[in-house]
Length: 287
Image (cartoon, rainbow, N blue to C red; front, side):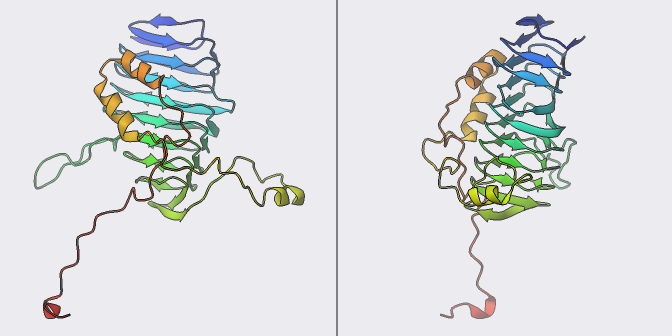
């Protein structure tokens, strides 16, 4: 049976699902519960505006934190998945679409700035097999985004992507690999464009010469992330995978660490161990 929720009163049981919404508000939004054992947690002060959340399977968890910015999105999820949205994220304009399936997760940290037309999906989603082994070769994989990440317009983020805190994904990018912290990626497929950068939220659209002069330099290091007191995405994925009970997953998410550098990703994240080249036949034994 489908249960649609279009207004919030208090914590309620919806079929065999749970909606926990202490001091949350909702407008122009809807929530669909289809299945059993699902939990939607809206942290105190959450204001859903132009948001659609669809539980299309069983035993999944959606955790939405408070934001001081406009944040419009749609979540479509099936069985045993977790969607986590941290604090003070912004999504500009057209809804971001988050597709979760095959018991994989999408995790988004705090203070991220997402432009319009964003799509994240953890599956391909159809099956691909090796013609020689007959084994499946396209497993689904979770997506993790750290803190203070800027993602440009019409970006597609595919399964297995992990983005370290402080990074930038350029508009129209197709992202398929891990992005180290304080790094810019762009293109189709996306590749590293620049490293050792940081970004800030002020928009240059209405800048005067005085504004340009004021913001020509910023001496703070609050948006530069290091490998001190980190908490890896791998640790989160391991816990969410091992915890079978949705209530236990919710409790885990409620106790995530808040250290600044918790989601730092190293610059070596995508380096491949290359095999030494074989010596050419005619050069063997030569020095």
